Image (cartoon, rainbow, N blue to C red; front, side, top):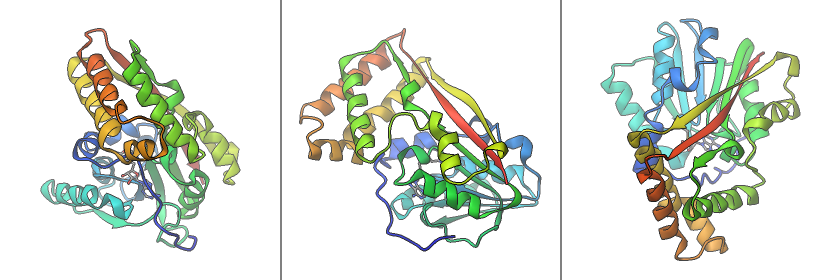
Length: 275
Ligand SMILES: C[S@@+](CC[C@H](N)C(=O)[O-])C[C@H]1O[C@@H](n2cnc3c(N)ncnc32)[C@H](O)[C@@H]1O
């Protein structure tokens, strides 16, 4: 555990439809690489838990154990959704805390598993979060991290609005020192953060969006990120986009959603570290 720091800025956006998109995720879909390592009495931490659908699913996998989901202060509405869902679904072994993954508010060697899904590619300092995840994990426990690799992201067929969206998000990431290759660098970051490489296993799994429902869902999220998120505000302020670009981006995603042949796929990289 290190000393607390100022809350970092998280700029992907937390509009209702972005958070509701995260809330559809399950442990089976997002951490199948971890599930075989779980024991029913384990104590799990889920950093950057958002609305907690994965967290609550993990709690079901450890009926004699417990799970803590943690997210930053700016995610308070998502954490509230997580708490309400736990109550509605009668899941008593999951709790939710506010805190920063760069300075976890837990003693060293507290958890059997420290998990994080889709956080490291857009945080202030991925190496620091990895160090913290390892610190709070007990010897013999596991660190489990999954991130996508936007450099592997296919949006087919391409169009100008989607290209403008990708250029905008790429520039905002780049100015924070985060490139489009988070996934393929996960093992490098782990080594730089002091993980023993011989105890690190890397696997991959992909997401595919092709049916009209899948396209409407993911395209709608991208429209929200392109128009309403902190991404869009930062990009406008920095002059990375013009005042007309949000409409162009929205129309580009709509064209892709409406295209019967539209398809999107991306590779996720998974790190499982046995401490
Ligand atoms: C893309 S969402 C993923 C949410 C959830 N893990 C999931 O996959 O459904 C990223 C989450 O990480 C949180 N986050 C970003 N930076 C963080 C930090 N430094 N500490 C804790 N959480 C953070 C965001 O607030 C957001 O809820």
